[in-house]
Structure formats: structure tokens, C-alpha cells
Image (tube, rainbow, N blue to C red; front, side, top):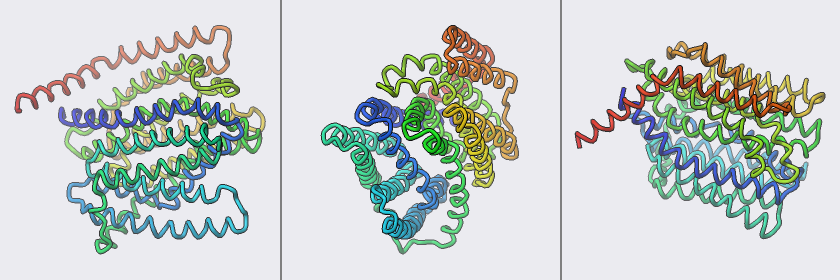
Length: 474
């Protein structure tokens, strides 16, 4: 088992470097956006960007997910995998291009071609990057993400500050940064060597589509759960408040950063270890450490939200900090959903990952339409927390047919309740909210250390012993 922890930590560390640098660049672009654009302009630009996220799974058939998962297998034919992926991608985008042209002919949408180019470059970048990750090019995958964020920042400065292009500059920056990242990963990983349209395998393609197609409703449901509330807010409350809510949503990205780093390594490890002799013990140990880390991190960030917001949210955007604490709770729940959802990918059984997300999306939409007209953004916050909780509970109980994990319900329910209480106190912004929030953080920190310190110490010891054994063999 020692080698399993070492590989997981090694992959996590590699992804961490790339993701941290990427997210830091994106995180510190927020002051640029909030100073160069009005709340309404930023709201419109982000809604269009979010629309691309909605269309991407449909236009690409999520084929990049299948390319990654099948590339992990030891007996994978990488040339056939990538060629099949490109074949699907190009055909689907010919159809998407015709639809965009036809719709624009009648509707005359100002940003139609921005939308199309953002969609195509995003899909191609995803396909090449996921293929590179699947064949083990972890460092190149990480660098491609860094370059994408770096050039996004450079182009934003050029177009937003230099040319004052506001929405146009924001969208053009996304297109160009996607293109540069795609070109880099194509040549750095020599992906062009795997492209041969004589290698199209219809049986393999069928198997890949069986895996990827359930991801479409899953991804669309995630989009509804995460982003549809912004459209409902825009419809009932205006683009300005939608822009504030979007700005507030950027702060929990620090938690999503930690989750995305872990997820990339966890997908690889769980896929390799599922069904092995001591896999349940391995999965339980990882869950304990992961859960403690996420809860403590979210609690600490909630405590510091007013301070962090002074540096990130400028001008009229600062008032959005009040929405962040409950979004942090949603981010914590999202982390749990990612942990358990990965087991579906490992088992190549995507049906319930789709079903659970669709149920969560339905719950989110229902609560949004019921509450937002009366209590505004707070309705979206409530919808987010409840919908993520529903998804997590479904996945916890359903994945028991694949794995048996020691969840320690008592400590996890207690610490999550404290996290939710802390978030509510900070949202209410009462006279003693900060003091009570600090007390909640201390309780969460102390509770996790008291219950898990032996397990975390054991895991650390295993990793150190593995490192020493490897060093002696050398």
C-alpha cells in the first residue's frame, strides 16, 4: 500500500504546481476585471463564458473524458484512442458550426462567432490535454494549464487595459489563450504522432461513446447546479446582481482549486486500485485525510473572507463578500461529491454519476425559481448548498457497491454542521459573528486533529518508509 500513497502524493504534487500557478493567475485577474469592467459588463461576459461551458459537453460528446479514462489502461492503443476522439470532435463541430451560422443568420447575436471559436478551441485543448494526462505526461499537462492562464492574463491586460475593449477583449483573450495552450501540448507531447485516420476503430469508438455519452447530461446538470442560478438572478434581479454573484463565486475557487488538484491524481489512483486486495483500506485512509483537509481549509477561508475580499473585490464588487461563506459550504460539499464520483469513472460505470447530478440540478433549479424572486441571491445560496448535499448523499450510499469506506459519520456530520453554522453566522454579519466564526474554526480544527491524527500520522509514516526503501534500493 505504501507505493499507492506515494504515487497518489507524487501525482497530486505534480498537478498542484500547475494548478496553483494557474489558479493564482486567474485569481489575481479578478481585480483587473472588477476595475476594467462594470458589474453589468462582467456579468454579460461571464454569462457568455458560462454558456460555452454548457455547450461544450454537447458539442464534443464529452469524448475527451473517454480518451483520458481509456488511455490509463495498460493495454490501451493510444493511436486509435486519439484518432477516434478527433474523428468525433471534428464531425460534431461541423454540425455545431452550421447551427451557429444558421442561428446567427436569424438572430444576429453580436458575440456568435466569439462563442463558436471559444467552443472549438476549448474542446480541442481539452482533448489534447486529457490525452497527454492519460498517457502519463503529467508535467506537460500542468505546463499547458499554466500557459493557458498566463496568456489569458497577458491578453487581458493588452485588450482590457491597452485597447479598452471590455467584453470583446475578455472573450478574445480566452480564444487566444486556448489556442496557444493547444499548440503547446500538441508539440510538447508530440501528439501529432498518434494521429492516423487509418486507425479509426469502430468497436473501440462504440465503447468510448458508451462511456462518454452519460457524461453529457452529467456535465449539463453540473452546469445547472453551478451556474444556472446566475441566469435566474439576471432574469429576476438584473445583470448587475448576477455580476456580483459571479464575483463572489470566484473566491470559493480556492477550495475548488484544491479539489481539482486532488481529483486529477485521484482519478488515476482509484482507477488503478479499484478491485485490488487492500483497496478499501487505502480508500478509507485517503478519505480521512482529504475530508479533514477540506473542512479545515473551508472553515479557515470563511473566517478570513472579509479580509481577503478587500484585496480581490474592488469598488462596488466588495459588497459581494457576504455571499461567499455559504458558497464555501457548497465548495466543501462539491469536494465530497468529486471524491465519491471518481469511483464511477474508475469502474467505467457512469450511469449513477449522471443520475445523481441530474437530481441535484433539478433540486437547484426548483429552489432557485421558488426563492430568488423573494430573497434574491440568498435563494441561490440556499439552492447551491441543498443541491450539493443531495448529490453527495446519493453518491455516498450508491458507491458502496464498488467500495467500502470507513466514513466516521459522527465526526464528519458534527464538523460539517459547525462549518454550516459558521457560514450562516458570517452571512448574517452580526456584532459577534467574527468571534463566533473563530470559535467554530477552532472546534473544527481541534475535532479533526483529535479524531484523525493517528490515521494521518500512519499515512505519513507509510509514505516516508516507501521513500526510504526506494532510496536504499537505488
